[in-house]
Image (tube, rainbow, N blue to C red; front, side, top):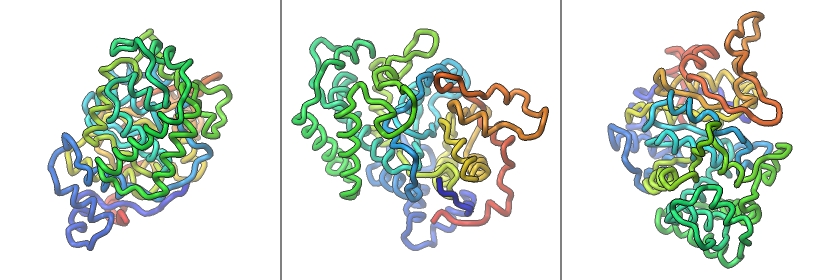
Length: 392
C-alpha cells in the first residue's frame, strides 16, 4: 500500500480554510460541511457523489480482487458486537459484502466503506443499484446472479431455502444484459453519477466475471486470492453466529430492508482510501465531527498486517485517533490483523494481547475497543501535527 506523510488540519481549521479556497476537492467537501449541522437522514445524489469522490485518495493495488469475503466466522462476533457497540451509529469498514451483515446487525445510520481499490468502490455501486432495483431478497439474488427467480420463494424463505432454490438455476445472457442496463440506468440516469467509461467498464467486468460466472458458488479465489478452500457465497450467507442464529444481511427481509433503505437514501458511501494514507480516514473524521456523528464500529479485516509491512502502521493509528469515538466504539478484525499489530515487542508486556491469534483452518473474527487499542499503539496527534497539512 502507498503511504503518505502529510497530516490533516483539525476540523475547525480546515473548515475555516475551505471558505476562502477556490474550487477544489476540499471546497466541495466544505460545501457539504456547511450544509447541515447534524447527520443527514438522506444524501442528495450530488452530495453522495461529492463525498464518494472528494473523500477518496488515489487508487492503490492489492494482491487480489476481493469480490467476496473469505471469512467463514464473520458472524461469530455478532452477539458480543451487538452487546458492546451502540446501534444507530456510524459504521466504517473495508472490503465487499461482509460489511452489509455488520451494518444490518447494528442498524447503522450512516456507513463509509474505505478500500484501497477503486474496484471495491465500483462493486459497492453495483450493489447499491441492485439493492434499489430489488423488491425482496429473492429478487435481489435473481439480479445479482442473473438467474431467473425460482418458483415458490417468499419473503419468509430462509437463506438456506433461497440458495437451495438458486443452486441449480443457470445464468442467462439475456437476463444479465437486461440487469446490467438497469444498473447503469440507475446509477447514471436516476442518480446522475459522473461515472467514467472506465468506471462503467469496471462495473461490467465485476458483474460478469464474479457474479454472472460465479453465481452462488462465487469464492474469494475468483478474484485471484489465495485462500486454500475459501467459502462460497452460498456458504457465507448460510453461516450463523455460533448459537444457530443467522444474522447475515440475507438471513431475513428485515436485515435486507436495512440495507435497501440505507442504499436508497445514499447513506452507504464507498470511498477509495488507504488506511495508512493522508486523506480518507481524516476527511471522514472531519465530516463526522462537523455533523455530530460518532463511530460505533470499524471493520478493519486483516488490513493491519499490510500496514505494518509497508511501514504505515503508525500513520493509521494517528488517523484513527482523529475519529469521533466513545468508549463503546468497537473494532472488528480477523485473524492476522490483531495479533501482529498489537503485540508489544518488549518481553513480558503482552498480557491480554496474547489472545489475538489466528486460528488454524480459517480466519477468526474478533472485536476490541477502538479507544484503548488506539491509545496503546500510538499517541494522539500533537497540537503541532494537527495544524499541519491539507486535504488536497
